[in-house]
Each structure stands twice: as structure tokens, then as C-alpha cells.
Image (cartoon, rainbow, N blue to C red):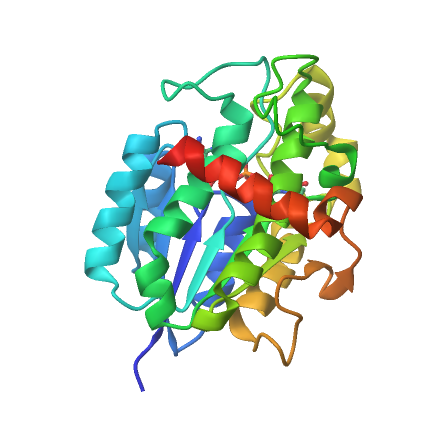
Length: 273
Ligand SMILES: NC(=O)c1ccc[n+]([C@@H]2O[C@H](COP(=O)([O-])OP(=O)(O)OC[C@H]3O[C@@H](n4cnc5c(N)ncnc54)[C@H](OP(=O)(O)O)[C@@H]3O)[C@@H](O)[C@H]2O)c1
């Protein structure tokens, strides 16, 4: 039997790197690792003996180029873990014209996912989104996706992570007939490099000795991702579901509105076409 192909983004650090290290122990898996920083992703890629790619989600052209390379090399993909992301401050706009937190946490991962759909269909693949309980503090305004009004760092991050849950559910409805399954999860509050691009409060909390003592380790944060990537949708977990610590949870209110989810997915797709 051929290896399962698992693509992990945000694999150069934190939760994604810990997931890659755990999944690399398996003998039935070929890992494909994606990170932003070329030196960091090369370090883990070489160390684990995996194929690896650098790609900055703040540049949609880079994401498209990555997708072309991956689709050519991997005509069958079993798992795509959309894990890259983070909280940013101050508000910036990418060269593509979108608010950076929204693009990095949502649009770029959606673009990669949609460009890899043929490979995911061929693998009857699982698409995993690393979301966050910050989604419960987020809200999405279809007429102001970039939060031009009232932007805050955490508000934009919460909206991006809510977008992950909404997108997972909407993609599930649309593609379940193709054998594709999607899921989102909250990894816990995890001691990683998360927050290094954020405002002072988040940076201080994540960087402090006390903060690190209170938080989960990257291995613990990666546990649900690894579990979702290695178990059976529809048997071990509910397709389209939102998970934390391997348990199905109620998603935020906006993510429970399917009509809104479909409209949001379509609005997002208009931005990446
Ligand atoms: N840590 C937490 O408490 C926590 C809680 C809930 C959810 N999350 C989510 O978990 C995921 C992983 O975060 P983490 O905690 O592991 O943080 P991390 O240690 O900072 O890792 C973030 C990963 O995302 C990549 N990334 C960041 N910006 C990127 C960009 N513009 N383009 C491409 N890749 C980019 C980073 O690449 P480089 O390292 O190469 O720059 C890194 O591999 C994120 O989606 C985050 O929102 C984290």
C-alpha cells in the first residue's frame, strides 16, 4: 500500500512543527511541510527527511505557485492541514490588497485548498483547519471583511479563526459528495512563537515565564491535529465538526448559520479568483 500524503502548513514552528515530528514517527506517511521562513522550514525538512517548501501567505502569488508545484508532484493528497496563521499588529494591507490577518489566517489557506482540490478528491482527503477559541470573540461582516471599521488585532484574529470554522463547514457541505471531509479544531493555549508579531499584551503573555508555565506544550497543542490526520472521518470524528481536545464542541453562533457560511465562502472565493 502506498504512503498517505500529509501536507502541513505552518510546519516550521510551534504546533505544526510538533505535529510534523509526531507524524514523522509513522511508517505509513509521507510528509510535505510548508513554512514561511525558508531557513526554518529547511531545518525541519532536512532533519525529518521530508519534502519542504517556503511560502509567504501574505503573497497570494506565492500560494498559487506552491499549489501548482504540489499538485504536480502529489496528484493524490490524503490530508491537508491548514495550520499556518497568527495574530498580527498593527493593521497592514498585503500587496494583494487585503487585511493581512484575514489573508494569512483565511484567504491564503482557502486558496491553497481550492487549488489542491483535484489531489484531495483523488485521495478522498481530509482538510483540517487549525482554528482557535478566539473565534468566539470574532465576528465576520460580509460588507467589511478587512475590518476597515474598528480594527483591533485580536478582533481581526478572532474573525480569521472564525473564518476557519465557517469555511470547514461550508466546504464540507459542498464537497462531501466527492469523498472529501473537513474539520476544524482549537489546539488550546499553547507555548509557541505565536504572538511574536502581535501587540504588547499578547507578546508579553506568550513570551513570559509565567505564560509559558500556564500554557500547553506544542506537542499537546498538536495532539488533536495528529489525531484528526490519522483517524477516520465519519467514524472517529464528525465531518464539518469543530473540535478541542479530541472532543466535538459547539462552534460560535455565526458558524452555525449554514446560509451565512455559504455566502461567506462565495465572498472569499471572489477575493482569490
Ligand atoms: N499558540 C496558541 O496558543 C494558539 C491557540 C489557538 C490557535 N492557534 C493557531 O495555531 C496555528 C499555529 O500557531 P502556533 O501557535 O504554532 O504559532 P507559531 O509557533 O508562531 O507558528 C506559526 C506557523 O505559521 C507560519 N506562518 C505565520 N505567518 C505566516 C505567513 N505569513 N505565511 C506562511 N506561514 C506563516 C509560521 O511560519 P514561520 O515560522 O516560518 O514564520 C509558523 O510555521 C495558527 O493558525 C494559530 O492561529 C495557536
